[in-house]
Length: 71
Image (cartoon, rainbow, N blue to C red; front, side, top):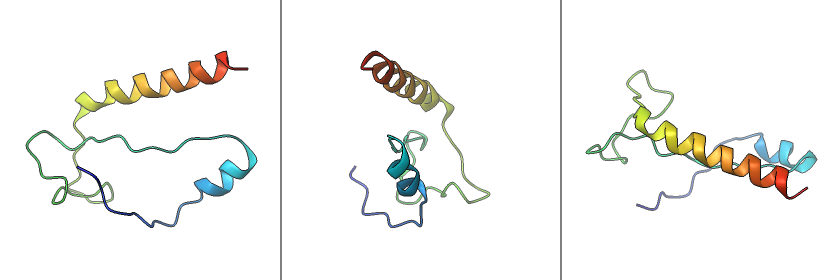
C-alpha cells in the first residue's frame, strides 16, 4: 500500500543540511490491521508489532555499515 503525502512539521531537513542523513518509515502495523484505521503513534491506542523491529535493526545496521565502508 502506498501512503498518501505526509506534511508533518519535521526538523529533520534542517539537520540534514548540516550532515548527511536518511529518514524512513518502518511499518509496524500488526498483520490483519488496516493501516488506514490503525491508531497513530501519538495515540494511547498505538500498538507496534515488535516483529518489525528485526527489519528495522537490519536496515539501520546495513545503512551504517554501508556508510562506513564507503569512506
